[in-house]
Length: 349
Figure 1: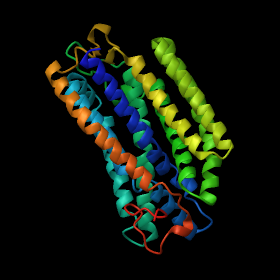
Figure 2 (figure 1 turned 90 degrees about the vertical axis):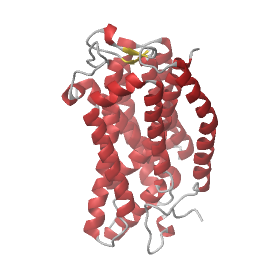
Figure 3 (figure 1 turned 45 degrees about the horizontal axis):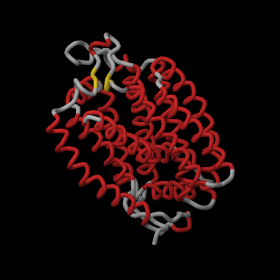
Figure 4 (figure 1 turned 135 degrees about the vertical axis):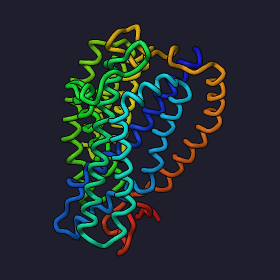
């Protein structure tokens, strides 16, 4: 196996890690108006602080995966990076702005004890979680289907080109999966009424996600499927159904693991559908970017491989340690009188 193929697989792993980890972050943010709604204003504020504290210690670490994936794409496949980031400039800019606004919401909502101030930052968190989830799904689904690329490896479409029915369906699948993944995470990390509410909601969103995902993966598989892509499609479907079953049995750990496998298998399906292309051209197959005509030199890939072998285990060990330290459940009763939920996790001391 040559280095270009290896780095294609490594980039697939990086995107898988990003969506599995950042997926529940997005899900928790989107669930603010549902799971964060209490009996009164005081109960609502406490519930939302609990939701924020479930992801407070880990959300910024989860975002490292997308930075690494982007950097690896730039170094390993510069032509892929150039076509993708120039052609998809507007949706990627919207994702970046949404992430910045969402992260500001995590940091700033607790800086003032003012209901209007917190409500505005809550909206930023909700929108900043929903928009990236939707647009990542739209972008990746369009890449798999093929986008207009000319002989100069330049994208010739626009934002409207990406907002086609299949692309939007892909966006909705990502949103539904992340909502379910986030609800399972909340159920796994909390106790009390929020835990019960999260379990009840996850069953509903899980069934919606299953229905949408089946339609999407069938549409993509029929036109571009291979043995490997159908295998990972089957794994994703079984894992999602297993997660719903485990949730009905109040086993949040198995349910969360189920959606993690579902998201991982779904991303793997996308990359199997792509291979050996990295950006298929809908204009002419001859204009498609492949793992070979879009890759860097062997020498560059060799240096990257050495660096990856050294630093990847360190990053994984650090992130695993973070999740282990902040593994305990959180209840409303654990919240102190004054707390900045964006930075200091509670219920873990």
